[in-house]
Length: 485
Image (cartoon, rainbow, N blue to C red):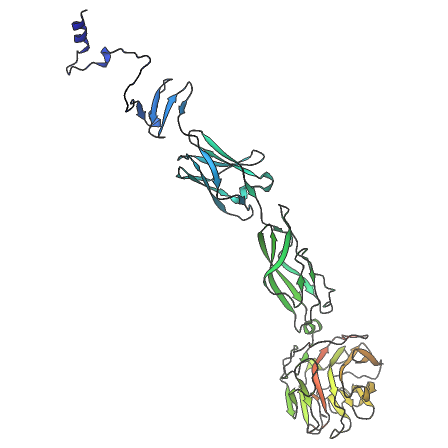
């Protein structure tokens, strides 16, 4: 074949171009001397061929790649993780946390994992490509375990290339309460100086950080202190009138992390414990803090705003000798003690001045010389007695009661009647006391048969009548501060 005929055969197509079927060309050691570059095959990942040795540009990944014996190898740049916005996770905090990675050469379609010290893996529920320098991973806080810290952060590209940031995330859990929420106990009215038993606050911290305790909000009984180191309770708590429950939130702190829990402490009130029916402070009013709801009446020169003699409160009740004065407790089942136990107590100041005071002055009396009544009577001779009106059951010399504040107390315990002065028994009797069941009203300061007669010159503060209980059967310490206010 001549060269002309050979060329004619190559150009056998209508347009004069060389037909592919006529072309069988091979190249060896190609040298492209141009400056713009050599165009190679370009296509998506789905358009890859299968021939080993093929070289192409992958328009899906944006990288050149070549087909090896088993798969394609890419010229994708190596990614790196430089840092994360999270270095510590509280696994007890609940919910998910978004962790942002900062690095280089990140690509869409990657996966973020967290590798524990035991090689266990946590795969992010969501791995979101932000840009080539940032990736977000969403993962449940509870997935991280304290015993497996520190955790590596691993980025895995869709191509399989990886980047790892070693030992970067620690697990520092919030402290955990051991003490159950709710009541920590009750401070009995007899345990105010520290004999109470309250549940101490207790918590643990998985990281071994030092634990401290505090009251975050709410209130505690007055003077009750929480030990910040061991969670125990201490302090001398003053008495209160009515039983009160104090609610508060306790906080445990460890390693800068806190956990709160709700608790309560109940302090028993004097009146609630004993079931006191009548409790009068006489501190500027005649209100009853006890359980009885009767209407109480004062008359004459009675003054509940008196300041001439006061004990602990700013004021007291004065029954002056300048005219009659009275305070009435209406008859009620609560004041009819019958044959049962009872306690009558209160601060009493008898003015040591007998002028204008009738013989047999009355501190109080219920019933007009009734065998079922009761009375506390004194004079400026020697008489100071308690019994059924004029019938003395327990007594003392009146000189021991005049000119000073004295804590008067009389109790019945079974058949035993005891008279106390300032907490010390001064007289006891086991006979002679009739049942107290008079239907008459109880009057302070006057004789019930003559309500306008001057029958005393005295001050009263913090008086109580308690039916059904002998609060004291031996010597006791009288109150050292205001109880009723």
